[in-house]
Image (cartoon, rainbow, N blue to C red; front, side, top):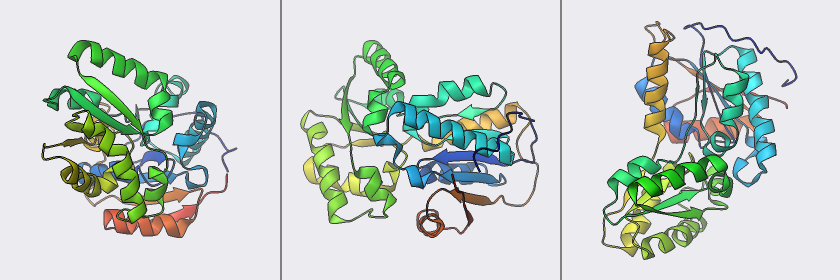
Amino acid sequence: MFSKMNMEFQADRSLPIGMFDSGLGGLSVLKHVHNLLPHENVLYFSDAAFAPYGDKTEEAVASRSIAVTNFLINQGIKALVVACNTATASVIHILRERYPSMPIIGIEPGLKPAANLTKTGVVGVLATSRTLQSERFAVLCDQLQKTSNVNFVLQPCPGLADQIEKGELISQETRILLKRYIAPLLDVEADVLVLGCTHYPFVREAIDGICKSITTRPVGLIDTGLPVAKRLQQILMQRGLASGQLQLGSTTGLTSGEPSIFKNAYRHLLRQNCTVEKITA
């Protein structure tokens, strides 16, 4: 189905917003979009058959991201949200070059708000290995370290997104992983943790609990889903693309994985129902 491509983009406020992630993590961003833009329709693509992107090569992530974007444009969308840190870091510049008239909003670890929040001058960044290894992230991190004198301590979290994809938000195995990744950051006096993957807000309560079990020092958690939704709202308003409908919008789920998994996760994580279509790619 990805072979059917329509490279033309025609602005139309009645069209849905397109969103994609390697799996279910982007639902944390979608939740903010629902709250801020309740009248918008959304096409959300979960590329679950190829998840997670975080352990793939940059070339593989780029190839899948371009293919999914082509597919969503072919369905008819008015804006695209790349609801995946890894894909944003690896390929968003390519997507913007290919589709210059399409509003494309990415997501990045919230280093700047974390730098403004820290009192110890140490910020921990929890993210996938691919995000932390990307050139885009390295440039951003280097710039902020020079201008803010904040020390960003990077912590790759292999396996954590997989646990969340499986719905194991409070399992013992998930808690063991979280403690393994968080403890070294708190040991070096990090007082702010950046949730650098859209999956991680779904285990925010577990992260907060582990922090409190290790240190009495308050630890701030930075989730960038809301700023992405606000940026999307701003762009839609500026370009005259905000929905004019009075009724609440709906979400259509598209997935390269198992539809029932997506449907159950959507209901469990967002407390709503949605239709889900299997896409063969």
